[in-house]
Image (cartoon, rainbow, N blue to C red; front, side, top):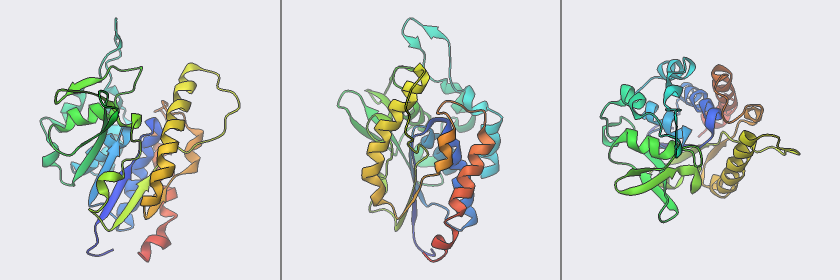
Length: 251
């Protein structure tokens, strides 16, 4: 892969997105480190840490000790759950802009006013991360650059678009494989299912734009909002990606 630019797409996925860390670990070992990254929702979080220069062990430590998941102010207001706690992200990124990142990075969010995708590639990194991560119906949208925004899954759960024409080989990672469910028994599972159905339709159209598509099926066993099994999720992403070792060796 010498002298060829590698692009990486990191999807929305909730807790399953922790598997993105394992994928990145495997790509490094296979000498397929990305030169440009695009992400949305939880994929935007992992991508931001990596693009900023955090190592795989550092990102793993942040996730497994759960400090990254103290990013929510869970106090109730008359409007419901409040915004993500911006200060928690600032501990890691301070006033960093997207132009400061070591790897070019694109974050997908949504413009609620026009119902279309917004791609962030400049400006305040933390604001872009929060705009991409916010979950409709649980967190209120935020205003950034004078536009009301919410998370990217609303319009683009697999943002391969920013990478087209900018790299020679695109790797897409989708951490929300879809399973058949006969009965959905709880409100949280209904939300999980609605996200999966919306995202899956989007991904089926866009995955053909990738040269390599990674979709670890073992992630089906893990709930979207269960962050307690981080190490298992990382290992699943790692082992599944290492299964493409021979294919990547001849690229």
